[in-house]
Amino acid sequence: MRQLTSLDAQFLALEDRHNYGHVGSLTILEAAAVSGEPFTAQRVSDLLATRLHLLPPFRWRLAEVPLGIDHPYWIEDPEFDLEYHVRELALPDPGDDRQLAEQVARIHSRPLDRTRPLWELYVIHNVAGGRVGMFTKIHHSAIDGMSGAEILSVVLDLEPEGRVIPPPEVDGRPARAPGGLELFGRGLANLPRQPLRTLRGLPPMVANLDTLPGVGAIPGTAMVARVSRRIARLIPGVEPGEVLEMPRNMAPRTVFNGPVSGHRRVSFATIPLDEVKAVKNRFGVTVNDVVVAIAAGAVRRWLLDHAELPDRPLTAMIPLSVRTPEQFGTYGNRISMMGVPIPTDEPDPVLRLRRTHEVLRSAKERHRGVPASILQDITQSIPPAVFARASRTVLGLVSRGPVAPAWNLCISNVPGVPMPLYCAGTRVLNEYPISVIADGMGLNITVLSYQGQMDFGIVADREQMPDAWPLVDNLRGELATLLALSPEQE
Image 1: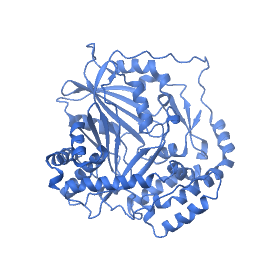
Image 2 (image 1 turned 90 degrees about the vertical axis):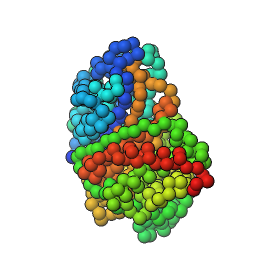
Image 3 (image 1 turned 135 degrees about the vertical axis):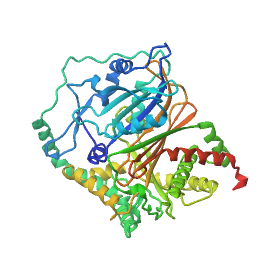
């Protein structure tokens, strides 16, 4: 058994009939393996069956503690059924990208069954162009971006022939699910530790109040944080960090910041990495600067088209991994987040790119002074018995107006691999990340680099953005505009 951390449990606590805690990946492959055999769900099942011992989250099932007095546990599912998790379907003709995105959006709009391991895999046939889709979704409470990449490294191969997989260790003991009474006893035993966890998390959390997006703009927060940092340095074992002064940027309220429905819209696009690098080299910025700048420009165009553009910059939530090399293979969540004001108020694309470069550089400098465990500190300061209610209450306050949104959208750039990958002997063509949205943040743009290209996955709430494909056209238009310009034309 393995207990979820407070941060892992946060992704469970936020779930309701409209908010889902799973993330997904849409893999596009050739329709047949290199050997000529068709890519099918059975081929995927056969591959997973030989590698399940290397994929712990695929075998974990939640075990809730009665009365919610403590965070849940992951246990080995004694009734694990691989056939339940791997599914197969086909698109109607013509099977174009829009039909594929609509099918993925339907699947992404369904919560995972908490009585089973929290993942599903769909093989989707009849994708136009002689391709096949594989959509995988897994709960964020089990993985973050880096641990998701670890899972992909087990499922995917560098050669079509695959590789030699070490056999599982055999202990001969059948898996046993703990009963409710045992879990309740564990929860009671942990009750005395909960005030200590809360006290341990409070000093670094309060000391870094002014680094938290939205919170830092509340009058008096900066003074409280500065005083708390001085006090925290006197407490053994607490390191508040040296935090630079935070800008007083409040995220404007947009159409993306209301409550989400239970329905999603999905679109995706591939952009050549060489074109992004050409812009990077021409203007002396980074690849990530270009990604964020064209995303900002794409959202600006959409808001202008719908007469919704605020006169202040939107704030993007940018996730960051704080996983150390020693923590690889531990799964769960080791993440932090930056709130970055992206220049959606800037009409000039070159100035928008330069401003993006400056705000990202400044945000990274400030973020270095924030403890890597700040999200863990925040979540562990809330007693488990009120954890879910407190999490949903905060989301409700942000999405329904009394509290200003901390951010407007999520933009994430995840590094991938530069060489071709294979699944069950079949070549992977694209890897589109399909991430999560929630009340108060109904738009997510995530990018994964793969084999000389950048694969963009866009997820939006259906009621807030009825059609997500214009953002794809806007992304390409923004990049084309920058490619056509030179620094002298600024």
